[in-house]
Image: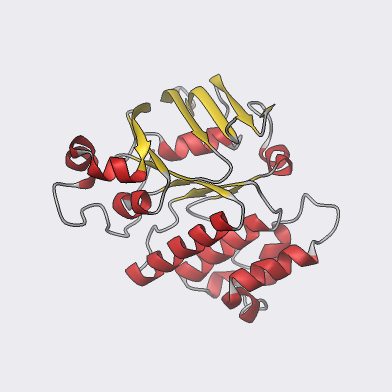
Length: 248
């Protein structure tokens, strides 16, 4: 049984329907990416899974439990965390205070989890008394992921982790995502840097116009001529711009 099973998700904003029955699953040892053109519904799907917007139809099961109608804080308690693309740190709080906010749902501050985050991201320990808003974009992305790890999640949702980052920082962020996965946390990420995402993922989904278009291993999607032509560019490293993209 998959760790995450989302079936026929229908959702949107106001009267605008964005998702038209999207289905995905993630196993407990996987990195799965979601790619597709702007407006495809990638981030909308992730928000629906995490309870940030309502599912109008369909179901979300996590670790065998129905979480379709749960609030984000309740879903976090079930073992899932979410790292948004923007506004993903509290700029006026210190690094340490940001990490402590990641554990707000717990009864007490998990010092062991904090130390694990510092071990994984040494720059955060070094800068723990620095205000988050004064850090670089790459450091803020590390902090956002570190805050998510404070609850020892089974699944981390990451929205556009490479957006706006320089190429060397993109590589570092992907290395950290792989490390997090290897330590026992499954990853579901939306990523506009499609080639790099597929190279570093076990499986991938391609969304288009709020519907599933392709699903396969990352390697197979990279080798799929139709996927390459429609979503990755005809050659070179098209799609590996590192630029921020607006999803919906």
